Image (spheres, rainbow, N blue to C red):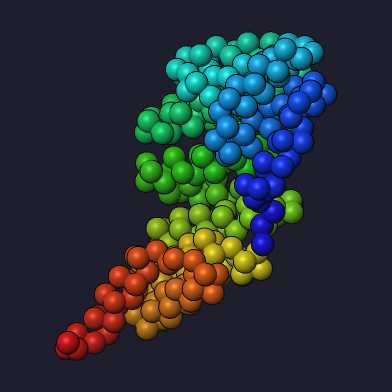
Length: 277
């Protein structure tokens, strides 16, 4: 199972660190890390309290920059505000990580607006900084965004390059969840290029990881992709086996299976038995 913090655990952690006068012992980096937990708990008064505290106790220009970045994200500021912060961050001593994070966020804004070329410009700028400071985990996120842009622009050769590099970086880390997702993304690209053997191998590796992690969402993505390939190749029986296994995984975890699984199984059954009632 993954190491996600439950809502009850999050509430306990936040309360322990912020109730009464305890917050006075919280520094700026910790206050900023607590904000996502407070947001998950939908305690927006606490979010504002943490943000104000982080601003008040920030010790230098760099910490103030991280506080400003969080503030801009919370109020959903215009892109230009982030661009200004990125430019300012690059001039701050040791501000490279902040500048890279802000540029990456601008890229995500562009991606959400389907401005793919602009997205790639900002993500590439972020990547250059991350390469300079050897931020491999940040590079993985950058490559994932570039890969997504390439796919949406149907630039599959570039998606293959970025996806492959993403997998290579993750291979050198211990991020099994990241590897699971990256393998499925790369498999989808290979399938789109028609290189089905490579796609099957990648989906299978992703499925094995998702089984080890007991990640039903990862199992769903991998098995759905394998079913796609089987269906393209006319092997409807194998496609149904993958989908049936996927359905049983949701049942085993006591989760409601996506309706698309049953609908697709029914459609494939009708293809296999066209004369059945």
